[in-house]
Image 1 (cartoon, rainbow, N blue to C red):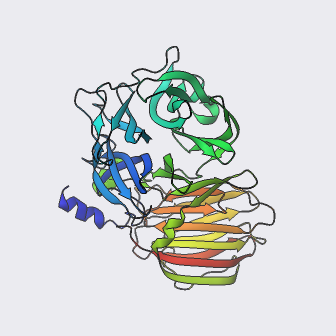
Image 2: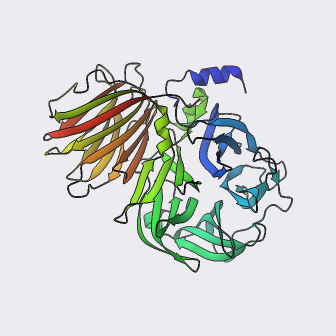
Image 3: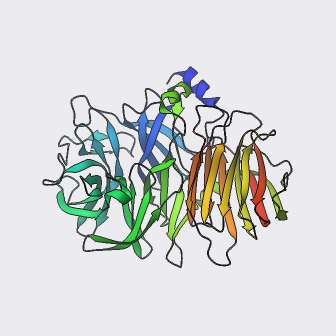
Length: 466
């Protein structure tokens, strides 16, 4: 890779230092995360030739601690005149009788293919019988046919493929195979309603979680999850929600690790126009690993992976501060663009409360992370995040209600242009911001419409993963 490009990218003040990114150029969906012999492997949609969505390959990296990553050679590239000649699109990676096997989508037309490795996931051999699924099911007018996700059951392999049925809605199509080669279509595992969850479900993930099963789908917007019962190869959803309340986190993929944790990563889309992204030499990042679990009350739990604590550096703590609408500068000199913050509040009488981050000294740039107890809204307000006219300055958020008598805990990760927020391990929101001022690193508390109380705030400077 061109050294001048790498140097230019490394100097970009918006490029994250502890979220996973490729050396340069474009990345999107996380693909085929898997743990083999204690080592985590992550593949991803990658354009090695530029910072735009084109020439889709599978990039590859590995980690022994879930935090620090080693870049590896590209795993899969299009084969001229092959079924994937126009791109290696998203999919999964499984162990089939000890053999690492990738299942992915080739496009134009969309077909499902496989590749295997016999050298520890370093190089891959595409199967000569590709595509193993050459057409969508007969008799269905589909809106797409891609992004396979496979798992093993007692009687063989099962797989969902992201799809949609014209004039009906998104769908996850269920297949069964004895060998990952010959596939039998069983019918839709789940079908959505056009007005509620879009016409096409990308990147389905389906797995057991606690006593239930979870289906996650990406319908060209926010990521939806369904929780329900799975029996006799039929899934009956009982509840649904959003895996992230923002607009940047998309196309997640997951693995079950050797500690029994369901870990999930999402693609963090840029919030600036695609036409300007190539000039920066890179675009896209992956979220921090999130652990999904079930709370005792049956609600979905979402929290950052514990291993991230190894990145913590210099530490500051604040306790027992009253936050009034007129208050400013309550945190003194707390500043930074690569921080972890854990703040616990008593909302008191405030209409809204939270933290200001990436704040310039003159107040022209700032981002607010807020909670409104009366309306149940968790939000990241980036409407004043940047003076750059090309940046997409906006507020994002969604519904989140505290349980009665609960305090509010906001667990926040700031990483240059990335903000990830976890609220009481029950909701998450990711956002991208692009401050222009070098001094836009201030952190402060705020409350509106009444007084809130900070119970405690823990703050750490975070180190680079590279």
